[in-house]
Length: 464
Image 1: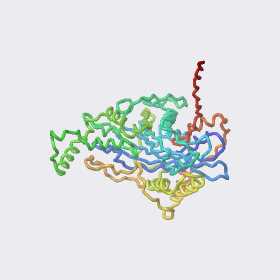
Image 2: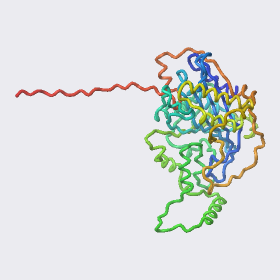
Image 3: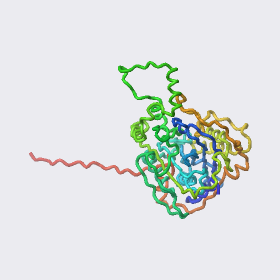
Image 4: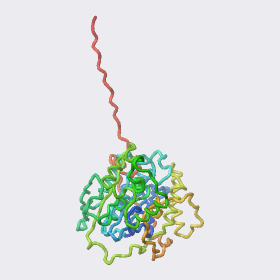
C-alpha cells in the first residue's frame, strides 16, 4: 500500500456518504544545509517537501470542493540515524460535510511516517515537530471570510493538536510496541523541551566539549524561533560603552569570523545560552506573550535496530511516486496566490484550477498553465536567512540521481486517488462533538452561554 492509498483507507472510516479525492505530492530527497545554519560543522541533511490536497463531493452530481490541505517536510540526518517530520501548515475551507475529514487525514499522515513499516526514510529515530498558532487561514486564501468556517481558538487549537498526536500508536520517549497489535500506550507529555533528554538521540548533537545552541534548535520555515536565534547568533554580550568603545574595522571583524569558523566556535551568544535559558527567554517573546496561547509540540519516536531495513538504502535514492521540487512549489504558489475560497462558487473554481494544474503538470502541459504570481518559499530552499559569519557548507557535491519526472502514469498510480465512503451517519447529538475535533483552524461550535440576571435586593419600606 502506497502513501496515497494509506490516507484514503483512513478516510474510508468516516461516517456518512460522500466521495473524497486526494492529491499527494512528495518530492525527491535533496541535500539541505539550512536547517541548522549555526551548527559547526554543518550536518549533512536531506529534505523532502510534502503537499496533501483533499477535495470532497457530497454526491456524484455535486462539484468537488477542496476541504483540507497539509504542508510538511521530512528531514533525514543519516549520521545520527534521525529524521524530523515538520508539519508546517494544516488548513480547511470549512465547506465540507460534518464531521470534517481533517483530523482523520492528519492522524493518518503522521502515522505513516511514525510507524517503521511505512516510514519512507531509513531512520531509527523520528521527531515530529510543529508550532501551533491560531489563525483564520493558512493554505486557503480568504477562506476565513466563508461564514461556515469557524477557526479554532488558540487554546482549543493546542488541545486539538495534542489529541491528534496522542492518537498515534507510539510511546513518546521509548519505542513502538514489539508486537503488531493495535494496542497503544499514551504519550508521556513533558512541559519543557526535548534537548536535555538522552532516551532518543538528537538529529544534530554538538561535538564533545563544545557548547553551541545552534546544534539544538532547528530553523524551520515560518518558525518564530528563527528570529530569536538570529539575535543570539549575531549579538555579542553587551558591554557598557563607557568601559570600551568599538574600534575594530570591517576587515578585522571578517578576520575574526574566519578564525571562529576555523576553530568551530559559535558566534554571538550561542555558546553562552543553554537550551533551558533559550526556552525560558522564548516564553517572553512577542509570539508567545501577544495575548494568545501558542504551543511548540515535539514527539520523539524510536524503533529497534532489527526492525529497520538491511542494507540501508541511499538517502538520495529515488522512490516511485516522487515528483520534482519545482512541481510542488508551483502548485503551492498557485494555491496561495492564484485562487480564493471565500464563497462556495469561488471554491469550486479554485478546486478545478488547482486539481487541473496538478494533472496538467503530469501530462507535460506546464507551458500552457498560468504562471503563479509569486514564488513562494518552501522548506527545500537552501538560502539561509543571514550569511555573514555563518559556517561554510562542507559538502557541495552534486546529487548522483536525476530529478524525477512526473508522468501521467505517476499521476494515476501515486498522486491522485479517490474513494467513495458509505457508512452510517453520526447520530445528531454526536455531530457537534465530532465537528469540534474537525481540523486545525476550521470549525469551532460555539457553546451556549447562559446569562445570569442579577437579582436586586428589595429595600424594606420604613413607615414614618
